[in-house]
Length: 70
Image 1 (cartoon, one colour):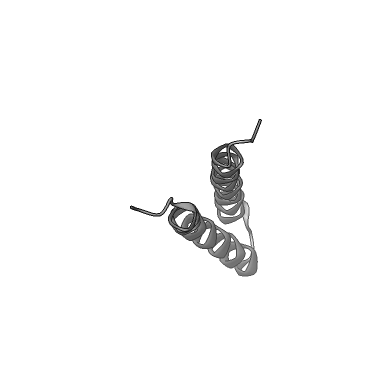
Image 2 (cartoon, rainbow, N blue to C red):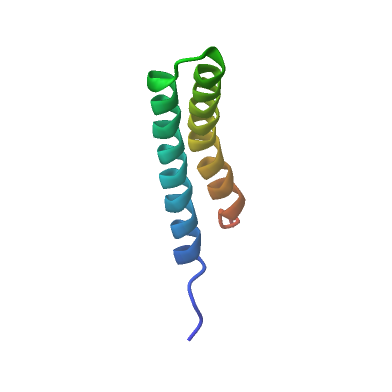
């Protein structure tokens, strides 16, 4: 029986969303508990990159994996 390619793709999308959400939480923690400016800048950068990745990457992969229209 052939495996459906949709299941691993769905799992990849879910894992991307989970990892980027965890990265955003880590960035917020760095922002909140950072004493020096460098740590706060790092936290802000982590939050921005993870939010951008969370918004763009799943959509780009879904578009790439979309079935061709007939």
